[in-house]
Amino acid sequence: MERREWSYIINTNPSENTGRSLELDSHKGTALQADPAYNGSWAGDEFERGVRSSLKRVVDVASEREELVDIEYRQLRLEKVVLAGLWMDGTLEAAEDSLRELAALAETAGSEVMDGLIQHRQLPDPATFLGSGKAKELGEIVANTGADTVIVDSELAPSQRRALEDIVKVKVIDRTALILDIFAQHAKSREGKAQVELAQLEYLLPRLRGWGESMSRQAGGRVAGGAGIGSRGPGETKIELDRRRIRTRMAKLRKDIANMRPGRETRRSTRRRNKVPAVVVVGYTNAGKSSLMNVLTDARVLVENALFATLDPTVRRTQTSDGREFTLTDTVGFVRSLPTQLVEAFRSTLEEVAQADLILHVVDASHSDPRGQVQAVHDVLRDVEGALDLPELIVLSKSDLADDVAIATLRSQFPQSVAISSVTGEGIDELKVRIEEMLPRPAIHIDAVIPYTRGDLVSQIHADGEILNEEFTADGTRIVARITDEIAAHIQAAGIELKRA
Image 1 (tube, one colour):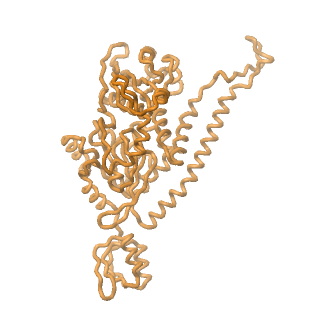
Image 2 (cartoon, helix red, strand yellow):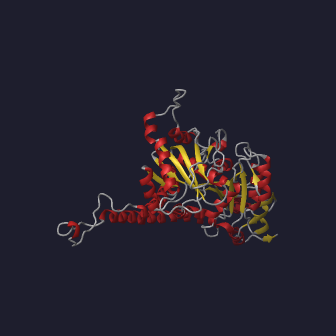
Image 3 (cartoon, helix red, strand yellow):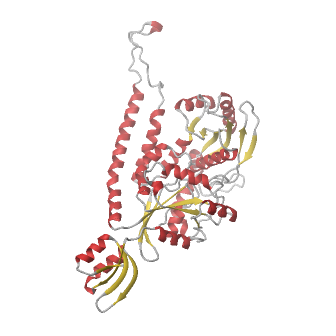
């Protein structure tokens, strides 16, 4: 969907209604690119991207040009939204970037951003988040734009959401609910869907409304006010039933996710038993992880200029130039203020990071705040035990879109980083070399002659070891290599003399 131009009001003084407007007709400050061009092996599955992007096409009424879309379905699906945020600390630019990112998230969820408002306050208003006066102003903006949803750039307390809805007269959701909605749309695997549903229920449970029309308060035996015999109701039962159903469903989802764990553990134990090193790709959403995955392994992972385009982890085997095999795993993207419910629900998936031998941390070099992206990723990894202690290689992606000054600055901040472009191929060879250097190597260095009758041992050394030199002699194959303890035990069990170099 082509981004429409809209402006928002920044109020630096809560007592004043004047402010400055700023056009947000570009992708500055977001993790998106202005004009993505999908061509080449990095672009992944074109059919899947076409299916998803077809839900975002619109009709250009001005030019009377239709783009092969069911207009009625699109009109029903689109929500017109108004954004609202607070500027409490930090710079105004950071608050603007946060609102731009919220707009990108809203568009990814399939809505149309109409307008937005930033309020300068030291602390959120405990009643309406924005304050009563600013909430009324927000209600006027909603009425003037014809919006049917307000999205707040923070997590709202249930009481704040209800109070704000009473003022603006439309549905109000917060940043957490928006991200959960995007995850629900994009999750594909059975495990991914279960994780997202669990996170949604954890978010919903404390936000169930009480004293609704279908409930009745108990009057007891009081006679005052006409209460008494015949007025005793069942009490607030419906909300308790809803809570019980939600808790029951959450328990089942946790059990289902736990039952999926042995499969992952089996695959991990097989890799550990075969001494296959594991490399995990992490990074901010839309930083270029899937594109890099496609370039390195031809995985054909979906690549789309959207936030949280891929959620389900993808594992592929590849090998270094000297023949050592390793696995490369693509993980879910991160974002600032990632909902804690998602971190907890996806903990089983994030365990892949803790089990890795090397972390490839992909950073969008063309982004206006790459250091903020790095910090956001580290904030999430901090909740995964042992993740921050693993070797990390910073990969500065999209170098073809970033200027030379930005690349030089990032290289000075991250001296061991590698600048790459999945589109042009720049830096890919250097990255492969760095991965080879940082992967763990077999511990035992040997020089042995393997009889020709034991070709199985030679094959095992080729598969799980690192060949340094190989020559064929009259007595057998002379191999100088680095091998694992398991291979060394097999060689000694065969009665072959093993010289440790």
